[in-house]
Image (cartoon, rainbow, N blue to C red; front, top):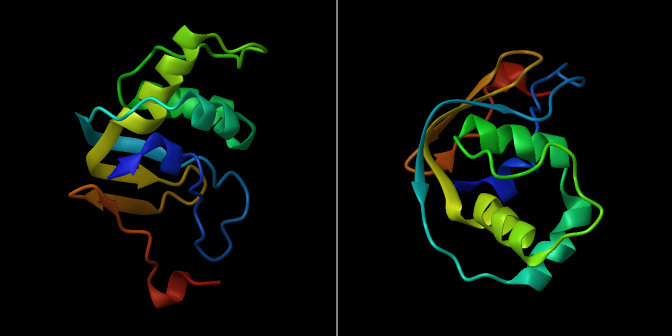
Length: 123
């Protein structure tokens, strides 16, 4: 399943697509919520690796508006729970991710993103 924690790491790698290729934009997605065990230490450790604005925008694209637009300096338990929900419990099962630069479409089917490129798209 595509979780937003994974989506926050994905960029377009089509030949010549080197600017504005992150983040990929969700389109026509179906979402499934799956409860996951809360691990506050894991969430805290992930903070420095996340691109916050991309995460907030992706969450909005899949219907979640619980995160603040700006990353807070301090993370209380309530915000850690919200972040856990967005990163670990929202699963995109079907739809597509689209590059903002070249408009390449990466389909998502049965929770699996197809990130393979055709031979002419490889750089």
